[in-house]
Image (tube, rainbow, N blue to C red):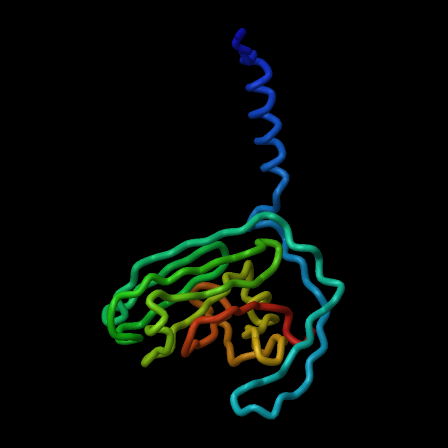
Length: 185
């Protein structure tokens, strides 16, 4: 039976086509898309507002980022993925956990946070979640949001601008899904 040989030119063309296709994805430093959302007051203590999802949100792109780091909660640590940063203070939890920041779509200002083992996902000391902004003006104009899986809605949580690293910061007692958006939209 005769063997078929692939020509090097066809293989190179295929590789170049795949590289060109992959380079069409959005990069993490690309301008962020925003969507309008309506805010309503939520009677839950500590919750600033509840946001309804916007049906006109752009379709997710294929660009995603994921990073994990082993952090001893007794010592604390810092990790970053894309525009998201976690600052774990000393004594946040007892033991060593693998913290993961997953950004399913880099065109959206959303991240999913997790820790393994899951038993560490309630902190003694609040962990700071930070969203990197281009300017202090941008940081001042943003809020931070938590995804409420029970009510299927985004909830605005307490946050502030951190001038030292130009971020929007929120204190967390547990990991879940979080987002940053334009305040009041």
